[in-house]
Image (cartoon, rainbow, N blue to C red; front, side, top):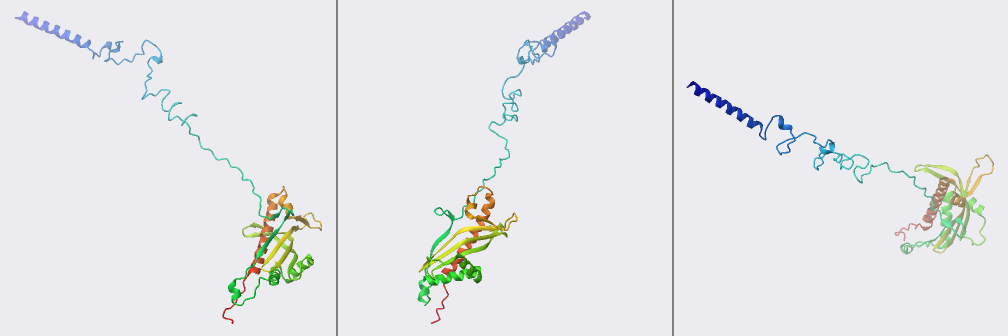
Length: 287
């Protein structure tokens, strides 16, 4: 009986030993053979392989590649290098260029006489309503003459207007009451800004007014800029407006003189027109 029991125990021990060796040889083995060169799908081999170079175990597949061609490399879409962004160009401060100076071109210039000349024939039409109310026709030449004389005396003063007419001399071509000639002298005011002007000597020119029924002609020419001599000499500096128009030096300063002259002469013309064309008031109840 004891011998039979011993035999059964020995047989059982042998069976357990054999079963342990079978687990070591399976595909899920955790033993010493897990790092072998077996290329089965169950292995997770970290061995560099027989190639011995980094190219043999470098992953060159796409998708999650973090190699030289990744999104932050030379060719990537997020490259911040010299070639980044394709057509993207870093913005720079714009180049500032000085705008060329535009000369003043508002002076009326007569190419035939080559002089700065203000000339115009102005029609004077009396409203029919004024004549119907019994008003006198102020468009006849002698009436326009008297109106122009009134304008000169108001603009320059009676004594100064007479002196200007005497300085021009008698008009041998015109008849009494139809022509006014004068040599005008007025202060020249140069505008420094919108609210301030500066004396710049005097402006002198020839004025001629000729009158006919229902129209008159004004003509201003031979403009001269006169200012004190800066060198201390007694003789004043005299400069014709045509010089300021054509001079190549001190263009901005020349334009200031031209603009001042043009502004003041146009004001004189506006005053002359307003005086000659003004319709007198007639009381239609005065009958």
